[in-house]
Length: 150
Image (cartoon, rainbow, N blue to C red; front, side, top):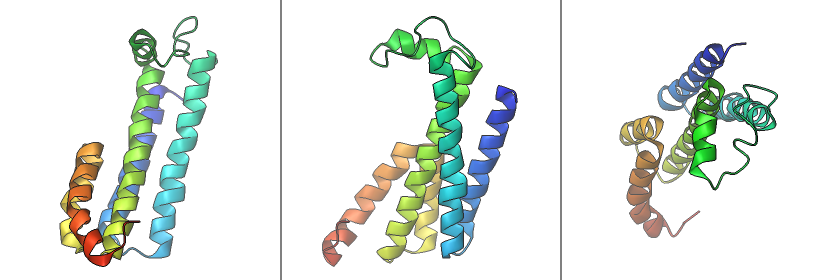
């Protein structure tokens, strides 16, 4: 499978999971599907791609490239390949979706309306840490009122 195909398939998977998270009722099956079929498959794709790139078995990026995650040169070497870009993108997709699921569950538990959740979830989809930061600011007063910080 080409890196373009992996990129397209993972984007499609993530968008389907996000659409379900935002638009469908939050029934256990919807949430489990977003988590296990969405985040789980993205994590598996990430792991296979990363291990393949770092080991040189898939899309090698040069001797020892990527083994030093403390060096900007090593990180640049990984992202200089199509595989590195796709694996990096899948990392974002998986973590942003996981964070979105957590926000949705947390917001539901704290009684936030779905209409308020939509822009926060969209911010998380398009700019992960921004959406998470907005949610953390909004949830703090609700968490204090309820006495529940989990």
